[in-house]
Image (tube, rainbow over all chains, first blue to last red; front, side, top):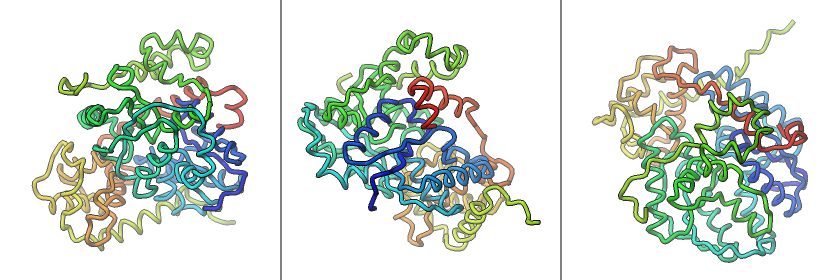
Length: 286
Length: 142
């Protein structure tokens, strides 16, 4: 896809947990010569979470495609759910008037320009947490390791485990599958001598950072490593909050918690920050 | 005076066409179920792969699904391993997605799977945006 300089960066909904990832992506795009305008959140939801109400999903799809059409520039997509839902459903029921590319595809296509920007060494042997599914639409399981190989000091361990499903968040209602996924990932990473697990998607990062918080193995998103090598210094607050668990409120601060309401924070946010994966005793190295 | 457009009408028409295509193309060979990496997590694992696919097609027709079919539909996480396994190019991933929408009551039929909608889902997205973005970013980016 030939992307002009002005682009819409459609980041999605749930990556708003990770402001550092959004900000780093914008800086990376700017460094590659683009002028990204970020959009996302509930008003740009793709509707993929509304399987139980296709009238609502259809309305959300029409609204979001219309808003992206109105911007009249190519769209760079962060979220795999948004990207695949656009491909599978949204554009089947609406006229899409913009070119669209997934961020990994764009970065991979621009890796000759990206490589000189990766100036800082990141000494780390990493295990890529990969899934099937989305890889059929965009070959991220090949492209992301090739991006990581550009970073001085990074060594990508052999991928000896591929998780089912297209990303981790869809396992939320299946505790046994989620337990297997966490343990298989940690076990494969340690067996491969990895220092850390690296995820492609923010949905997987949100889940697997629990391994980090539980002390099993450090976890990053691939954007974190690219950003670190470029010298971008955005703090991964979500990881800090996750590690703090019950004490996350002290890091977030009363002023920010007041913005969302203390009751909502305690009911709907704190349980997620306190959640830890169920690790099996046979986990090597644990 | 024109008629008021129905919300999401074209999407629904696309889904109807896909259902008809799938019902016409699927031979119930069961290959999609046999290769599925999620079937092991079903609440009602099936021993007969042909029968479980038949149950999925029943759901697509708006009929009651078997417990095995609903169990499989409930654990589909779009692995897509079924797509190349299908000898008829049915696109079983699409078949399962549409079956899931149908079984959850999303396409107008009575729900056959429990609908577990998180009432805080969108408010949680808004809340994290407030925690992670500046006021100006909130105004311009969301």
